[in-house]
Image 1 (cartoon, rainbow, N blue to C red):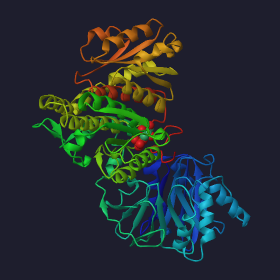
Image 2 (cartoon, rainbow, N blue to C red; image 1 turned 30 degrees about the vertical axis):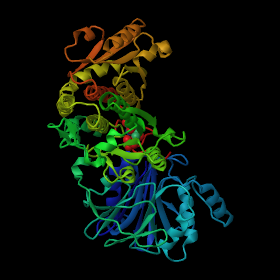
Image 3 (cartoon, rainbow, N blue to C red; image 1 turned 90 degrees about the vertical axis):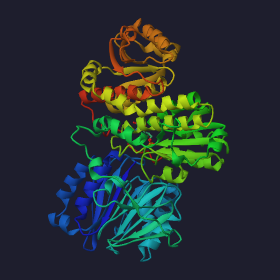
Image 4 (tube, rainbow, N blue to C red; image 1 turned 180 degrees about the vertical axis):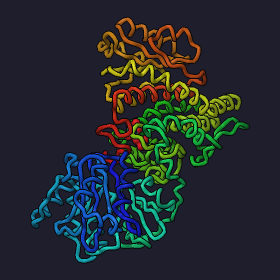
Length: 613
Ligand code: AGP
């Protein structure tokens, strides 16, 4: 959602903060700001737009020596939730005295009541944000001890926060706290870095501390003193990040998205490596923390997620039913907790989230735990909130996914779901021979994807034909239906073409009314069960003048005859085929967006991790 960076140490704080914001810019980027301690005074600079605009603003407004003098500061990139993306609404926000600066991720649910109470005491507000109310509240509670003032203020807050707070009266320390919005603290050599995401820390240290909900820390260049909000000391272990700084760079590609698409043979290799047992024909997923008895006794698998993760879950639904012979259903995470779900101790709830911070998915996890279900997660970010709150599950090991449009996380999610289904299935009716065959098909996924990536140039040429369309349909059946949904999401979120995914049979129940001459229909027509029906649906579209781009199985000349354009993917197990097929659509969408001159890595209105409802 938004990005937070705090620094205290020996280096030039403005430079560290701006570089850190750049690494977080994918999270939210409609305005940015920073506050540094210059001697015993607070200096603040804010600007709408990208981090580059903030850097220009700071250099325009501040004396050059401040950039070398200041060694403590906090900074923020914003994705607007309260009030438009303007300079006045950008963080940091100050208290009434101007001595306290605050940056905040999350939502203060009771900010209106707090604001009214503060206004009745003479406080005057400049912005429309909930964050400024919290800054004023901290100032109001401040009796000379910033830590205690922050504790007292947070006790009055309803909602979520990840914050960093500076006071001109207490140089040399930063107070940071979290409830529902991640805060990670990098423990360096004579310096300490606070961030909402480890990618802003990795350039400084691999040693990190993850705050838990209602932790509050007093941070100096040499120490991290963690308490709870009642000032009771808390112990949090120092973990190793295991992430290298280069992984967060573009590696010679024009966009993070293209880098991450091409990384997929490696990321899938990392997701699969060491997790297949080619002797017993099963998978080895120790993180699931389940016994064979528990898996055999499962009543149902309920998958929750949002966006791309929801689409991966839909592929998983087919996998659990086909392979594991267990009833499975996908529920939109935002809906799950409000529908009073019927889940219990024999139900496995699987939360899928690349970031591990999506608020709706986290809420679904908490509701499932409340109902006594068996909960686990598929996350990419180690130590993320959802991963820690479920306490069990499977990490994707896809590496940092920086582009807002999710690609390698999706394919790794599908690969892990297939391995989970294999494990559950082998504890039920799936034979060793069937398991061995599927395990080998899963093991081959990186190679299948590499074959599709070899067609990058050809796909770019095909994409050029579709650049000027304003509407597009994606259709598929069976496990390719979620692939159609995912392909439509990719195209719409980075090229801004209005793209919709439908079950292939669904088009004639209304949407086909929208087909006119030349309307693009991207059809998942791989040689898997249901292909002939898809070819029939394609004919219905062609009869109305649609232009068909088919994703077909290599060498399927029958299918090729039905298409205006086609991309071939290798033959493989129907569920495994979803992975190379989606990679073809990722490349197609990327090149259409590139040729349309779109932003790609940071599409308008989007954020990488949606940590608000
Ligand atoms: C997908 O390209 C989007 N970035 C978005 O739909 C994303 O998948 C969704 O917000 C869920 O995020 P998560 O996997 O981090 O929970």
